[in-house]
Amino acid sequence: MGTRKLTMITALAGLLALAGCASDAGLRASEKLALYTAHAGEPVSSFRYFGSINGWTPLGDSALAVWTRPSEAWLLELQGPCQDMSFSPTIGLTNQMGRVHARFDKVIVRGGGAVGMPCHIGRIRPLDVKAIRATEKELREARVEEREAGDGAR
Image (cartoon, rainbow, N blue to C red; front, side, top):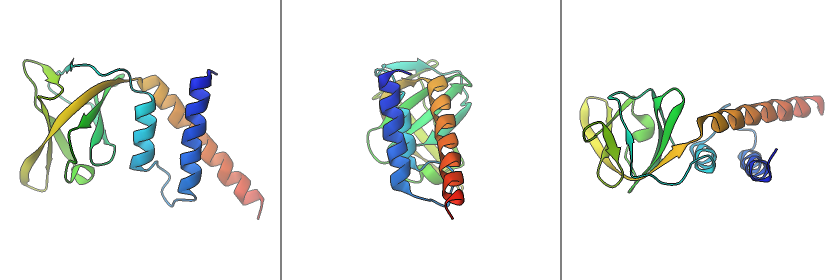
């Protein structure tokens, strides 16, 4: 295992330890943001958009991960807070001729019958989806081991 990956896993494990015994099994938005940021590449000016989103994950109120294919995802860092993103059932992306551009296009938060709220995209970074999935698996396994060790100590 490389030192960068080991350092990142150690840092994420520290975040989980600080979170304590949270009642939910998933990561908090700040923990997810740290994970996704650790696996994001250098900023790009745009990405190809095929007209539909394969999935998305809110990462707080000013960032989100968007999957354009099962194995292709992008970290979208917004120019400011995006209201109600964490509670929205759906989002949309503006695009120009099949490309989403940083500093030009927007995330449109939809839900509750209200007009979509536009949130400007400040920066786009490609995500290493395989590395994210592997780290999430390692973190889940670490939580299970931690829980089992805690149960054995009682």
